[in-house]
Amino acid sequence: MRFILRRMAFYLFTAWAAITINFFLPRLMKGDPISAYLARNQGKVSPESIESLTTLFGLDSDKSMLQQYLDYWGLLFSGDLGVSISNGLAPVSAVIASALPWTLGLVGIATVLSFLIGTSLGSVIGWRRGSRADWAVPFATFFSTVPYFWMGLIVIAVFSTTLGWFPASHAYDKGSQPEWSWDFIGQVIAHGTLPALTIVVASLGGWVLGMRNMMITVLDEDYVTVAQAKGLRQRRVLTHYASRNAVLPQLSSFALALGFIVGGTLVMELVFSYPGVGKLLLDATSAKDYPLMQGLFLVITLAVLVANILADVAYAALDPRTRQMES
Image (cartoon, rainbow, N blue to C red; front, side, top):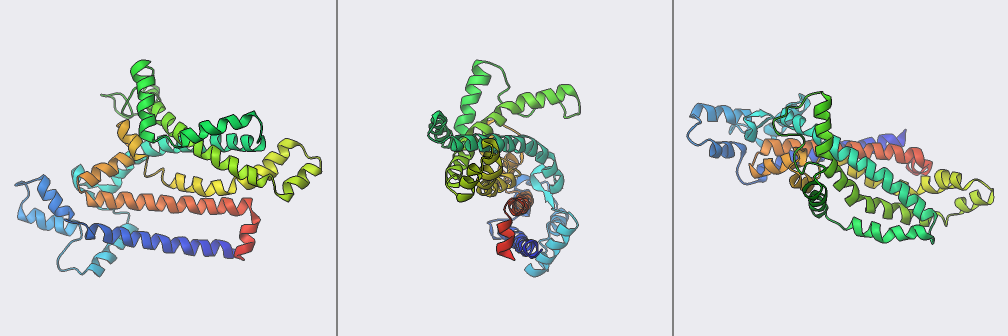
């Protein structure tokens, strides 16, 4: 219980610090949302509308920075993230909600698959160290250094331009509207195959190498030697003793990867013109859409915190020594 309370206190403080920085950072940047909105709509905004926008963005001159900060917390607790100046003053929460499912569906599934496949392969390669399985190490090293954009361009050139098997961009066919139908689902799968393949292949090597190196370290531990001396089946020693302990450091990296799923893989989304959160963040930055940037940073930060909390729970469940050290 003390372990859980300490970790929750740490994450609550981290959340407060992140939200506070998220409030002050846009206000330290050059310009403000109103100036950016007026620049995009020159001559179309009346003085009365400017005053309304000032109130809408919480930038009233008669309010101190502390009062604006307290108002910001009040808006957060009510679920109000403001309005997006680059999306026709649409609510930021609605704009993020329209892009978030695409990122979670594509990057989320690809990241989980890459972790599961890479960890499993790394476990087997590390278990069979010194055998022919070590031939996979140079390939894993190569793919772990390949940039996402380069891999994306390669798969587009091969599978889209040359073979014509999959579309090269967007999330679905032009002219289609999102709906729950088999035809639309097929379009989403076809358009998402190449981006997902890019993420899996480009990140697979890192998971393989990380798990292999940890397996080699764990195999020299006494508990593995004792388990083998007891005559336990090799598969049981591999899964219940070696892999279970070797995977612990991988969980921390996986938690960070899960958290940044919400941020999307920006370069990948640009290469494939995929309508995810990463591309939305770039568009918001280009348009100086501070409310949307602020909302995206907040969602990404909270996602990373939640992912790390889940990793701590899994870490404590797999390794009881963690709870003992905290008690």
